[in-house]
Picture 1 (cartoon, helix red, strand yellow):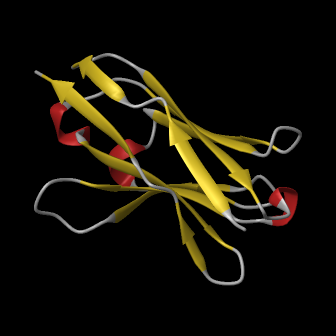
Picture 2 (cartoon, one colour; picture 1 turned 180 degrees about the vertical axis):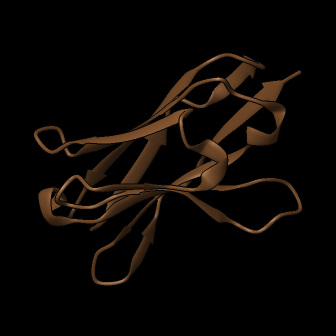
Picture 3 (cartoon, one colour; picture 1 turned 120 degrees about the vertical axis):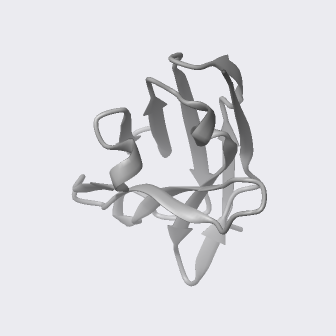
Length: 114
């Protein structure tokens, strides 16, 4: 059974930082492509960052230089270090992988106050 469990969300002031974690199980994590998506109220879900099994990373333009995606294959965990947070980053953040189909976590809420 594939499970993706996000944690680390919360309320933070503008300019602050948060680190999100995604613990994966039921997949061969070290070969799985992983990504973070977010969905703000009234908006479509969008890709924030992705990390391939090789470690190659990709970021949406809005977060380049502020967010860092990483993975720890020993712990089957992916991270998103978020810095210089702005109110526009407020959203539910979802962990994603493609493993015999699209897989999603339950999401973790990030609220950035101005």
